[in-house]
Image 1 (cartoon, helix red, strand yellow):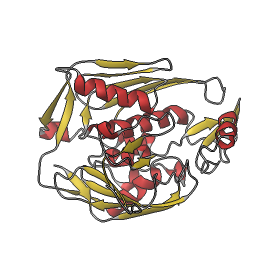
Image 2 (cartoon, helix red, strand yellow):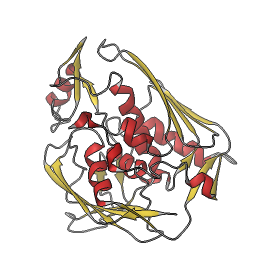
Image 3 (cartoon, one colour):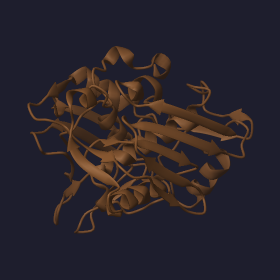
Image 4 (cartoon, one colour):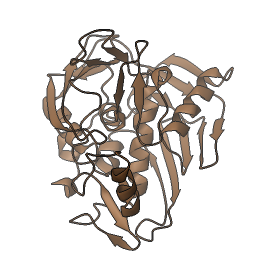
Length: 307
């Protein structure tokens, strides 16, 4: 069955790119509502967004949605991953600023409050997009692929010059709370040289050692070090799930990313939905529902590493 939150959850923090304070409230929503976003600070024009791949304005640093009136909301990938990973299908996200709060740079703060509030089943079947034909998207920096599979699987490979990250690979079946147990606490990461460049150019003004893993060569500069030896590739998988959550319904298929970012995954969705015969929207059988991300997960499965 579809599901929503049992009660509203509130988050306050700073935007990664603006550095300005922002509040996010996620409300329960009715059957068929899907995932919708509203800018409560917009005085005129359309303040609503559909959390959908067709609304993405591609950006290398985050996932950014723009509606028909040109109103934008950015950095939604972590909260979208949390919603998908907790199995929430219907919700209204209210933001009083142009981007979601970065919090600790992972999805675990969202997951903690969502699972504490509880996820309520709704008496209507879940529909999913089942990948029927392999599609790919390549550019000069990397590539991504979606292939047929019986469950949602994410596989990711990265290769960074800094030895603190280096070459990392990981594969996960996202069934039954694997996102919460394995990925949700992994933080965004970058090199110190990138931080210096972005700050000098007025970018990532809210970025700090408190909300990112920052590395310099072999050294991890962030206090406390890594939460996982392969935290970087886990975070890339987290981002991929958040971007795939913009499909409009859960995806059943095998995603593979090689040095892929937000724009590559969004272009992959465009390939999926514009390639004849590549995807089919179907109603889940009970067996399929049992394997969806978030089914049966509890707050006791949240990793302790973020405490």
